[in-house]
Image (cartoon, rainbow, N blue to C red):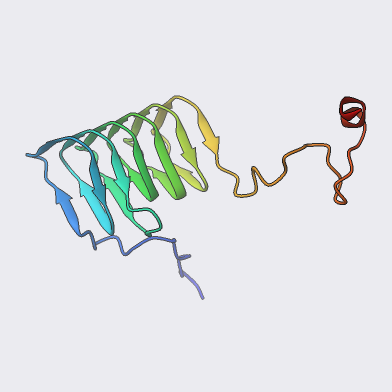
Length: 148
């Protein structure tokens, strides 16, 4: 169908359970589920409830000084800390992240900046304990020499 946009794996853009307004500063960690929209300042970690399909959205006037951990993260403001998005991360044009960014799927607009490492989380990492291990469990090449 013409003009049909692909669906993104997050809640509807207008539905957020919690709002931290531009006139609010929160000092301490914020634990949430559902949707969290931040126009103000958070000085502490922002952590989604484990196993939830939570979304955190930081507007262009918002700031978080601390790590952000959630499945879906949309940033258009400033983050001074590490960002951990287990499902989807969107860095909008005014996003400024000073810290490492860990993501599964990322969208980054022109103008967004990251002063740190971009690290893709691979769902299959950690499944193999040995790089040179064959499917039957036997060792190959250099590893055989080390096991003797």
